[in-house]
Length: 251
Image (cartoon, rainbow, N blue to C red):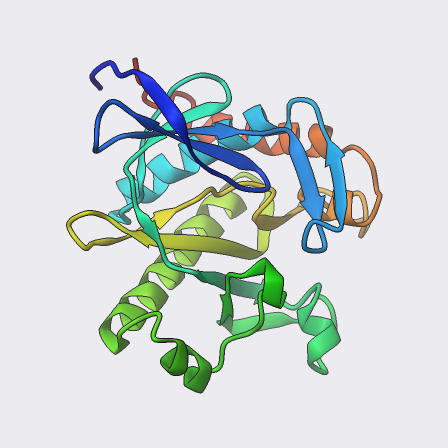
């Protein structure tokens, strides 16, 4: 990885800041300590959360790449900074569910904890002003966000990510209940996994714990006021590090 100079702020989201650099094919992402839930109606600062999510995401992006799944990731920079390829984010949140939980059980007559086989894939319009609504086929077509071929590739990538992460997490005694990913197009038009993969975006249960609250190692600890959010994220990182110890570093 060649050296670079940090430029101006390109974009700031709920959990990250994205900066341009003096290289057109390189952007820098800072992971913040901000915690948000319920469309940012609930907010807090959790010291160390950004670093934990950055470290976890770097290792999981590299895991996906080793399995032939393209991502925007290039290298870990600082404890809470990552170098990535610039991408045009598709304004569609992709959610894959292996176990029924959370909002799904409020929207459909499915018992919490029910296995979903095959996994359920849902697409949501990424727009806070509209509350990130569920996209039907007709709505997706009307918005013109993806061509049929692009949608097929998006869904293929999502299911490949699920298969990879599900197996990996099971190997470190974590159950991947569901997760959200975002994808983007590179300058060459390739669709790649972007954003982050962390306890902020994955619902993870500790397979070594039976208590329904104590097993939670993800953002639900913040949503449900369970406490111990940073400690839970730290436990996820410890296990991920055990399997993926050394991510590549930038300069």
